[in-house]
Length: 436
Ligand code: LLP
Image (cartoon, rainbow, N blue to C red; front, side, top):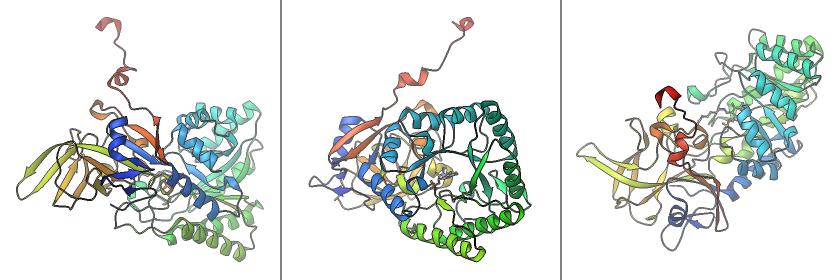
């Protein structure tokens, strides 16, 4: 397993993250456990801010759908990034952390009237309008409230980012945004310009996630700039802001060779600049909304090994005390991860095993082929790069409580999300009187 951020192997032959021994973490906080490396999280934020430094401080909006806790929101604010939220729930977590609402973007392809009202009441910085229904709704609510929100229009640029089809979002055949091809996007610009209650600041696109090809981003930027030029010709409107969404891929296994944050920033900015020159278009502020590339490498999940089953000539299954409930990505996207036996980090590998979760599903696999030393129940498995889209997509399937999340730095470990307890699982259940 590649060691990320502050990971190292200590004198006891144990994996250490943020100066905390994985064995001690499990003893103190229980298993399974999600561990966030604060230094690496902050470093990724800083790299993004620096790479987009010529824009102002809120040009990088962390996509909170990757992982949002109140403590994570505090760190994001502390590092000078904005926040992209996609629901009233994410907005509630952000506000509970004291995140400045003016640095929040609200996304979503089906925002409810209640969510739009909530966002306007608390004064979010931008609403990213996805479709004609929402446009009419937002106009109506803003008129009622007598406010004038600043909006971006989400466009579908028709770029195929060659990622997994479930996480590719910018194509023409996509549920998100106004399609550029066919004229919906231009009509949307005209509608907002004709809506006195809305202020059109710019346009947005998000072409997908876990993208390794800079050309996909370049291409999207070119399509967006060509669209802005067309919109200017048609309406005279000049966009102040161009939000290119998120999507930069990360290293999960040695198969992944993603570009760096700096290469990505350079490619995007150059593509926009070239088009600005070509069209003699005033350069818009570039926004980005990275999620995975900020939080994924900073997260590691620690599990405890339990039962195993060897099928001669086929494979050996080894089960951990979590699985698809805390990391759905292998089951949903055939995602691959690296792992290591955290309490035997220096021992030689002697066999390959298939690491399975504890849910009642054959598809509940974490890693198909993990080389391990001699293992026994009670050993700890560390799975790296699990910060993004794991806890945020977790479930209580099989009535499994969600793990705790701890933040580690400089030998300190603090709980930022408590472990769910069995009792939490019945908190919302009610038995009607006639059944009592
Ligand atoms: N902006 C918008 C509008 C998005 O929809 C997303 C992700 C992002 C930004 C952040 O993208 P990132 O930098 O994290 O790639 N559950 C999937 C990923 C879904 C991504 C959804 N949108 C997975 O686990 O791979």
